Length: 319
Image (cartoon, rainbow, N blue to C red; front, side, top):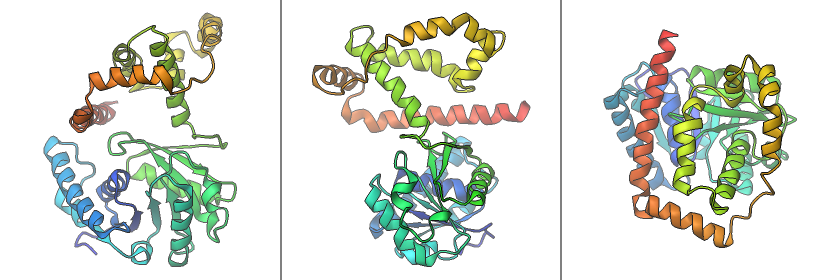
């Protein structure tokens, strides 16, 4: 237990990028966090990485919460015992690789060690909650809390209950996520890929078609997003954009509805991400960002996401 008085214990299972991000987010709100990984060296590496990241956040003015970087880090510890990680935790966040059988086993393994009121959440991005909780005795305590990558800057979390998740688990999860500064949305009906991935996949498919059909280059299609659509989507969604770009949404449909239907009818079938089209897009992307420069480019991305998050944070204070 840290010297800082915590607001409660959070168990994090998995010490990768998502697990580390969750740990820092919860610690920023004053919660005691215990990170578990089956490989002990990865826990040690995760703690070193977290310490460095918190220092960077503090230096850049992007550290979340009111606690100092040292205070936040003091709330985060590593553990090589699954039982000790989840014991007395009121919330557990699973962050293991995207394999249904693995997730099912993790939840089965922690069942005997958690309380009756512990929320058991998964970070899965596509797996249906019923697929890995169906046979659990505590399945009514299970829920999906799917973050957007990278979670520290991209605040959206999709909250997805199964048919047997208790309503109070949904409400408590949403309340907790809001408290720690994330933006939860509740998925009311189960669909493959949830919602954010479905939107992302629709965009990727149309980008693919436009590039492979020779309409535009891979570099320029990305410009369409970051210099155009993405600029306004950083502050509002497409439905509100249409609402504001017309005299209300109904007027927008009257003005643009037929055009949307006409253009959308030409989108064509779901593309096959293979063959000559794959070679073309891969060549263009590798030329644009060589594989040995991916990590450098990720850091460039994260610095800009941090700057945008800081701007949005400052704007929210004056609205």
